[in-house]
Structure formats: structure tokens, C-alpha cells
Image (cartoon, rainbow, N blue to C red; front, side, top):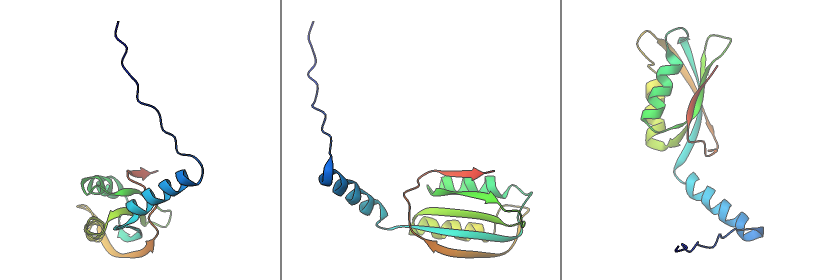
Length: 120
């Protein structure tokens, strides 16, 4: 029986490990933006959240979308600038059946979120 050699496991600890994690976060954050959006109009009951999730996944964005009690839809989207801009354009129109009156957009700090979900 032949035994396969195993590569040693390298674990980074202490300050060097913290620096490596910070460097990886900085590398990810370069060129990545996050935006908070509130969509006003006739935007609930038309499949807005699920269509937004499909569009965000197509654009490879992270974040979430949810209905708010006041009848608006709220979302946070994160990714490269071009994809976020494309999603903001999509949110300004929405899916068929929606009637978007306006969107309120604010800048946020990127968090590293890479998946997109619908929050109930």
C-alpha cells in the first residue's frame, strides 16, 4: 500500500493573519460599491422582489430586497460599479406590471456580500 504525502496545513495567526484578512478585504472592496434603494410607486403585488432577485443574480450582485409596510420596496445591492448602475436602472423601471414613481438611492460601504436574497 502506497501512502500519499499530505501537504502541511498552514494557519495564519496573530498580526500576520489579521493583515492577510485585511488585505483580502481591501482587494475585494476595490471597485466594489454598495447602494441602499427605496423604490416608490405601485411596486408590491407585482412580483417586484422576485424579478429584482433574478436581475441581481444575472448581474452577479450581492444584497437583498424586501417589501416595506409603507408600500415601497427596499433593497441593498453590492458589486462592481457597472453592474450596480445597471441594477439601479432596472429598479427605476421594475418588472412588467410595476409603476415606479421614483427611487431614493444612498451610498453605503461595501460589506463583501456576494449572494442576493428576498427577505420576507
